[in-house]
Length: 334
Image (cartoon, rainbow, N blue to C red; front, side, top):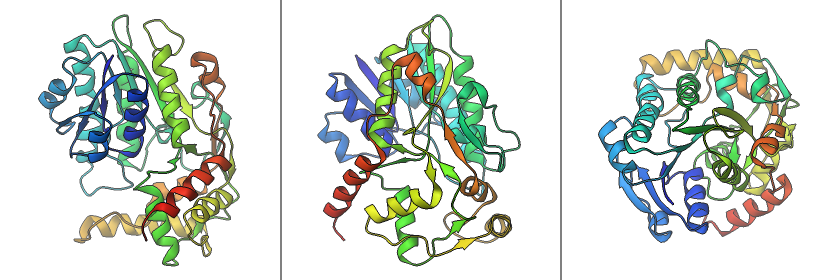
């Protein structure tokens, strides 16, 4: 098949492109930039912005299916409309491309953040048991929620869709989340919010990619997974302190150097958001209210629906993933 991957240059996107090429598919990646890694995989690259409907439709022309993983991520934005343009309008443009070109399968990468509810814990539940969040304090979470709802509503006899919600993807090749955490840990500026005993689950990169492939292979109009959302993770919840310390150690970085009470972190987040809105400060604030809530809350999910509906279970354990991560960081130039 000829498959479009939006955001193929990203961490998950590259894993999807590698896996699809290994399965014999021709792959087109829709990116804002150009990536030598995709050239090496013989992936055709089409440059453009999700907010540009014509560019999205042009990229999808001639394709048989779409993996829509591109999104604007982040904890904060001075102008929340940038999140809407990329995540909501951009996803609508992908749906428009499916209709315009008769593309019958769409795998959408969502996020568990669409169900976030302040500090309300989620322990062992599946997507049918956890409602969407309300009054979300993150433009990323809010716009991804709207986008996921649009995707699932589009499921019908001519377009089969499925939404996957991987939780905290990590592993070799991550050039965003882990490097930022490592930098703060090495500078002595990384603290746990709360006591670090809240259970959280994460997703090793290969497990996240394999979940997408399994869902895709089972996806068809009327199939068990069509029109549904699924949580995806390693299925191995661990205390936040243990998880973060293990990831840092694999990257050769020290553990968090202290704790900060949730109420203090939340207040700091509110102050940072206010300051970043009025001051000419570059980058994201070090803390936001949404991030404080995420860091202190128990979040882990049931993988049973994914096993039942498209035969997926995570294959790479947390420990095996750590070994691969450690080897990758040891090969990385200092």
